[in-house]
Amino acid sequence: MSGTFTRFLGCLVLAMLIGAGGAVFRLKLLDSIDDVRVGPWRSSSLIGSPQASPMLRALVAVNGILALNHAQAIYFTASADDDGQPLTGACQYRVVGHDLPARWWSVTAYGADRFLIPNAQHRYSATRDSVSRDADGAFAITIGTQPQPGDWIATQPGHFLLTLRAYAPEAILSGTPPSALLPRIERAHCA
Image (tube, rainbow, N blue to C red; front, side, top):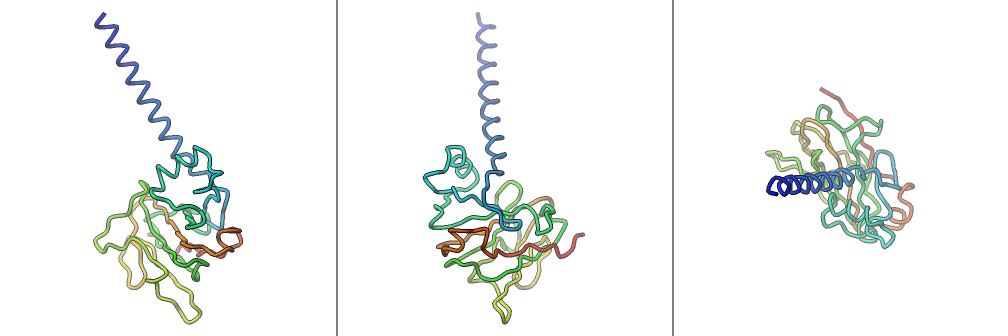
């Protein structure tokens, strides 16, 4: 009787681990749920809306802690540059553009684990209020593992992601994001 109970308990624990692991794996795969693509940037028009499926809501709960609804903020993620090459710490990049049509915006780098990338300089993001601009209002943010003067965000060896947040977006961004001009992600050089 004891051996049967132990086997039953072992099977139950194994089934629970497989089920939980499968759920987490599926949620990680749901990164492909995006109906909005602007260059390398991806988003979903359903995040924060009543039309969001339970699976999309679970995805946001796992990957987008405290995400606001679509009317308050739009979130874009990029895992590749403008040429479609995966973002990697072996390369240095420039995020180049003009202010987004939103009250405030930011660009943040995250490791493959979706957490901020630790760095001694504490350079995690650049914002509308922090970037330098040239005479026509354009900005250029350097992204890479080596500290740079000016607007620079630290990355790490291996793959990383960029998240572009636009708060209080104007109609051009919230209504028809594919027509919005989002910053380019240019590969400057690779080691």
